[in-house]
Length: 67
Image (cartoon, rainbow, N blue to C red; front, side, top):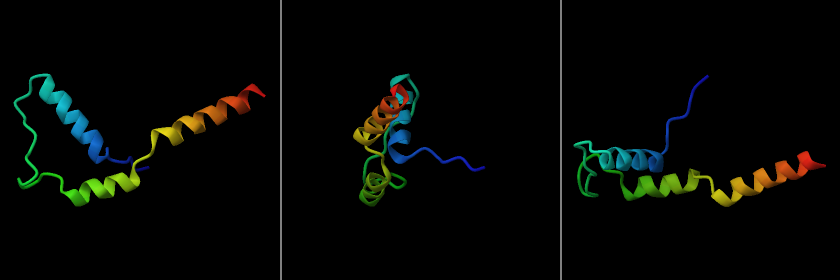
C-alpha cells in the first residue's frame, strides 16, 4: 500500500507553523530556485477538495444513519 504525500498547501502550512515555533527557516521568494511556481499552484487547485463538498458528504451520511 502506498501513502499519498502531503500536498502543496499542507507543506506551506507546516513550514509556516515551524517558522512560528522558532525554527531558523524562512519562506522562499517566488523568484528563488526551489520555490513553488505559479504552475504548481494551478495544478494543486485542480486536485484540492472543496470544503463544501466534504461537508455535504458528511451531512448525507448522518441523515442516512438517522433513518
